[in-house]
Amino acid sequence: MIPKSLRLGAIWAQDKNGTIALEGQIPWYIPADFKHFRESTTGCPIIMGRASWDSLPRKPLPGRANIVLSRTLTIPEEGMILANSYEQAYREASLWLQEQGVEPKNPYGVNTWITGGGKVYKDSLDDVSTVVVSLVETVLEIPDRKKVTTAPVLNPEEWEIDTRLSDVHTRTAGNELGWKIFTYRRKPPK
Ligand SMILES: NC(=O)c1ccc[n+]([C@@H]2O[C@H](COP(=O)([O-])OP(=O)(O)OC[C@H]3O[C@@H](n4cnc5c(N)ncnc54)[C@H](OP(=O)(O)O)[C@@H]3O)[C@@H](O)[C@H]2O)c1
Image (cartoon, rainbow, N blue to C red; front, side, top):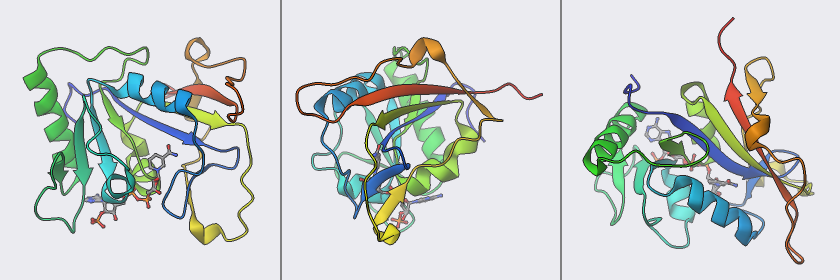
């Protein structure tokens, strides 16, 4: 059950092949994309899998409730809210938002974000109505696909691009890889 107060979105950065991580780490460094992630998610609960939490260089991510899904952890680590199911994670998100007493503000109209990783994006996709993708303009050549974590593929029958919140032009800065934001909304049922 998803509490009615939640407006759930997912946010990730991928290359043109859908790669989001290589050997447990994000394989690029684009400060402007981190800034976009921070600005979009600040003030919101973020829900992530235990592997993504482990991969964070600094944790918790400040200004957000860091809700971590795990079946193996029994005691929460410092800075996290532990949840052993999606139902519990969504309940914790709703409680946290209620306690804050202010609705988070971001252009996407999302108040709770799924922030990874591969497994959690795939398993929660049916629950979210907005997906914000930073498309990094590269194709990582990785022959051993076992080392790779990928994003879910968005079926065009179910998802449409919100052109108002998607880029026409590539964002670039200095020598950094270029990237573009695509915002997807779930199509209304036919
Ligand atoms: N490029 C990006 O935007 C981006 C964003 C975020 C993360 N990432 C990358 O994604 C990678 C991690 O992805 P991943 O697919 O390996 O793992 P993940 O989705 O981060 O975490 C998987 C773990 O979450 C827990 N979990 C999953 N479903 C659950 C459920 N229904 N109930 C309770 N616990 C549940 C389990 O933890 P336990 O094993 O403890 O039970 C599971 O092993 C990292 O390399 C990270 O850098 C990339």
